[in-house]
Image 1: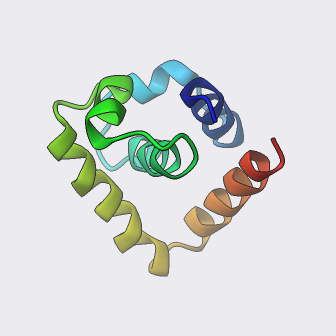
Image 2 (image 1 turned 90 degrees about the horizontal axis):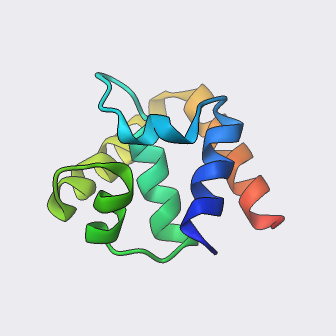
Length: 92
C-alpha cells in the first residue's frame, strides 16, 4: 500500500490533517500510530518512516512504536481507534 494512502487514512480516522504527522507534540500518539501503520501496511523501514514523519532518525521510530504497544493494554479509546484504522486500511 502507498505510504500516502496509509497516512491519509490514519489522519482521517483520527480527525487530523496529514501535515500533523510532521509536528512534534507532547503526549501525542499520532506519530506512534502512523509509524506502526506505515510499517505494517506500507512495509517501510524505520529510516523511511522517520523521513515521512519528520522524526529525527530511524532509531527514534522504535521507541515511538514501543510507546504505542505499552499504551494499548490500558487505553480502550486507543484500541478502538487502531481497530477503526485497520478496518479502513484492510478494506482498501
